[in-house]
Each structure stands twice: as C-alpha cells, then as structure tokens.
Amino acid sequence: MQPIPIIGVLALQGDYESHARALEQVNAQPKMVRTAAELEKVDGLIIPGGESTTFLKLLEREGLFAPLEKFACTRPTFGTCAGCILLAKRVTHPEQESLGVLDATVERNAYGRQIDSQIVTEETSLPGGPLEMVFIRAPRLTHVGSGVEVLASRDGFPVLVRQKNILAATFHPELSHAKSPSQSGSPDDLERNPDRRVHQYFAQMVRDASQALENSKSAQESLPVQTTVTNRQ
Image 1 (tube, rainbow, N blue to C red):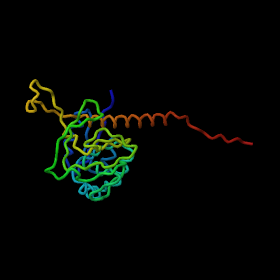
Image 2: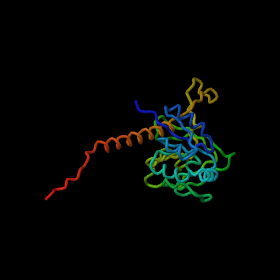
Image 3: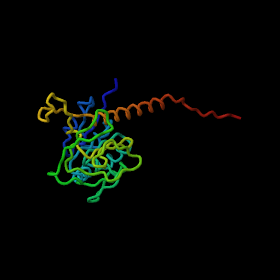
C-alpha cells in the first residue's frame, strides 16, 4: 500500500476547502498552506482558483512568491483556473507577472465574465470517459510548448495539461461531478456525485515523485564511501 501523501492547498483565497475535501476523497492528506514554512512540509501543492492579480499581491505580502516559484520548479504543483494563470510562462489580456514554470501562454477571462460561466462535458485521456468541466471566468491556454501533454481540450484549446511535475486546468475540477445512469435517463433523475479523477491523477503524481525522491536518497546512502590513500615514499 502506498503511503498517504501530504498535499498542500494554497489557502490565501479561492475555494481551497473544496480542494481539501477532494483530496481526502482520493486518500491524500490535505494541509492548508499560508506561509513559506508550511510550504516546506508538503509533498505537493494545489493553487486553487480565485483572482490572479489578487493572488500576486497576497503572495508578495506573505513573502511566498519566491518560495512558491522554487517549489513549483521541482515539486508536484497543480494550478486550477487562476492557479493555471500563475503557473504559465506568459499571461495576456492583460500581461502580468507569473511563476513562469509551465511552458504555455494563457489568456485571462477568455470565456467572458461571471455570467458567462459554463458547465461542459468533454473527452479526456484520463480513464473513465468524458469529464464534466466547470468554467468560471475561465482563462484559455492559447499556446503550449512541445513538452506539454494535453489531457483534455475544449473547442480545440487545451484545458487540462501536464508538463513533468506541473499539472494545470483552466476549469474547476473540485466542482466536477459524475452522472450515474438511471432507468429513465432523465437529467433530473440522474444522481450527481463528485468526479475526483483529476485530483486522483495529481495525488498519484505526488506519490510517484515522493517514491522517486526516496529511491534517490536510498541510492545515495548505499554508495560506498570513497577514501583517498596517500602513498608514502
């Protein structure tokens, strides 16, 4: 049985509580992160949705921007909606500062204002069939680099991507639901329940990274100690 990963949720703004509940449902231990010291104690991190410019101000105020940038360069990090904006190398509409760890260009508020929010269902390469996606003032990934794997798209644009230790979604997977079939097939009769495939995918990323780190430490400890012998004439 794999160990339970400790996954932080950046709790400065946004619906971080929903992400925490989702993590519990995929056998991961959530931990709210508000300081650099708390960031050092987690195996992976989720940056939730919210307002990206406000996020930047809060990160600067709490002295978290540089530690978060360093963390996201090597550790599993998952950004949703505004979190995706913060991860991207280039931000447009308008341009703004970002962590720059995801090789992608993201356009803010690309799908309109709050009243233009939508729930759509699209195909994904994740197991389990089509995925419900909740878009709220969502950004659009207008370009991704060759090293970025597209896991799901909408209207020809990526909406769920992975680049090594980075996972990013332009929608809110913490709000995704799965529909259970009923006899009538009527939408009103369909039981709605949480779809946690995206969080499960990220939790496995964290487990794999933790295992790789542990294996590397074990390999280093098993190396023979080299000594220098000085020949005396």
